[in-house]
Image 1: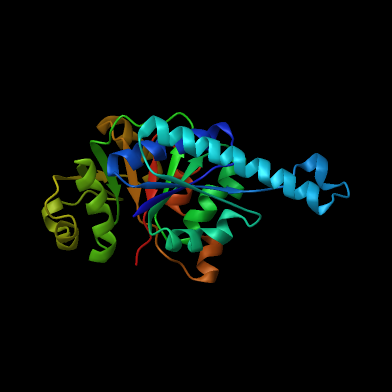
Image 2 (image 1 turned 135 degrees about the vertical axis):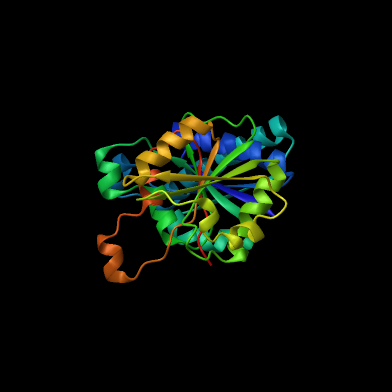
Length: 268
């Protein structure tokens, strides 16, 4: 098993790489660094020879290998690198399968009106809903993850196979999981069917939190602060074509500027 992390050498992605390396050490697994090579804008309008482009690509590869070697020395982990002209959104599935990756780690941009309207590479990958994506905010530092907030709809029957991914991660991190359920009216938790959650997350310490709120995102943000959670887990639903045009995913919104890492696990 491996962890795949994407970098474009920016401050945001550098922090994601560091966080991913900490996780690789924690999980005792291999770290795969990926960079999608792009020709610099100032050079893209010029007529470039094949040898010039190849030279730029080699410099990119060497830079990636230097980072990987530094992480190997610092964290004592196994590292590998991949550099491609093809973007991450096109290469992700191949890389995840080729290296048997548990999840993809990517940096999370700061919140802005533009991010909310147009999204970003992180929200694009999450919307693909094919594999788990761990989005890391630029200021997040790994100091262990003891409290996980799992936001879900308890009335929905989430497949055990999907919950098993969260169970494995929480067990490896020895984390306590709080199951967050927000509704427009308060219901007694005893009256809410959540047998599948209990079964899927067996052997974990589970706490249930029922919140009355018409503003789920606002309630989530308050609960993150109150509970001092170190990781938010969400499982985005799949929507049809027309519904997806008008639906604003809560997972996508949270990925447009959160203070703690967000793990998005697609429902299988």
